[in-house]
Image 1 (cartoon, rainbow, N blue to C red):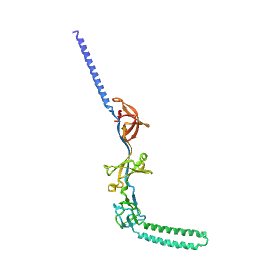
Image 2: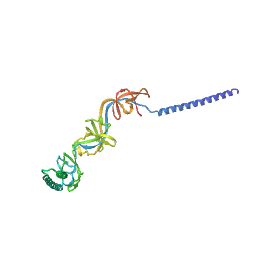
Image 3: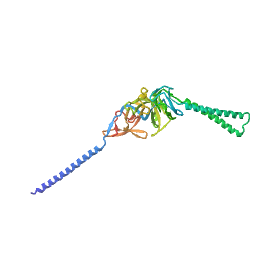
Image 4: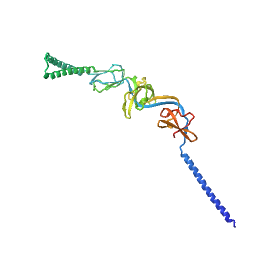
Length: 346
C-alpha cells in the first residue's frame, strides 16, 4: 500500500510527458506545413543558356497601294461629251483620245472675242492717229491708258478661247489602264472637277508611313515584307525604292513616306489602288550571334545587365555589352558565354 502514491506519481509524469510530445509534434507538423506553404508561394526560378541565332531588326509601318505613273485628267471648262475613246477598265496607249467635248459653244466665244478685239483695235488705232505728232495733255493721258488696257484684255480673251478649244480633246499622257471615268455615255455634261484617271499598272508601289523616330534607320535597297489586308497569306518580298524628303502629318504625329515596289506581273489584275497593308522593313541582320531574350535584360542609364545563375536557386547581376536588338532578342557582344545560365522572367 505505501507504494501506490509512487505509482500514481509516475503515471502522472508519463501522461504529462505524452502531452508535451504531442504538442511538440503538432508544432513541428505546423512548422513543416508553413515552411512548405511559403516555399510553394515563392516563384519558381527559370534559367536558360544564351543561344546562337540570326537576328533581324525590323520596323513596321502601315500604308496603301498606289502607282508612280498616275494621271488625273480634267477638262478646263467642262462641257458636253460628244465622243468617248475608252471606257473604265480599258487599256489605253500614250496620247490615245479618251474623250471629246462639244466645241461649238467655245468656237462661238472665240468668234465673239475676235470681234471685240477688232473693235478695240480700231479704237486704239484711232487714238494713235488722234495723238500723232502732238503732246498728250494730262486730261487725255488717263483715257489713252484705259484704251490700251482694254485692248490688252481683248487679246487675253482671244487667247483663252483658243486654249479652251485646243483642250476639247482629252488624251492620255501615259500608257496604262483607265481605272476611273466620270461617265460611260456621250451627251453627258461634265464639270471642271470631273476626272478621268489613268494608271500604269507596271509602276505599282506601296506607300508606307514611317514614324519620324525610325526614318533615320531606313535606307534605299533594304528588304521589305509586304502583307496586304486583302491577301494576308500571300506576303510580298520587295525592297525600299524611295524615301520621302518632306514630312507629313498623321493621326499619330510626324511621319515620312517610304515607297516599296510591287511586282508588275500581277498588276491591276490582282492588286487595286488604295488597298491597305503593312510593311515590315528589315533594317539590319546579324547572322550566328550570341543572344538572350530581351525581357531577361535590365537597363539602367546606358548600361545593360542580366542575372546569372550562381547556385541551385541563386543568381548574381552581371553587366553585359549588347548590340542589335529586336522585339524579342538582343545580341550579346561581351559579358556572357554559351555556358552561362541567365534568369528568365516568370
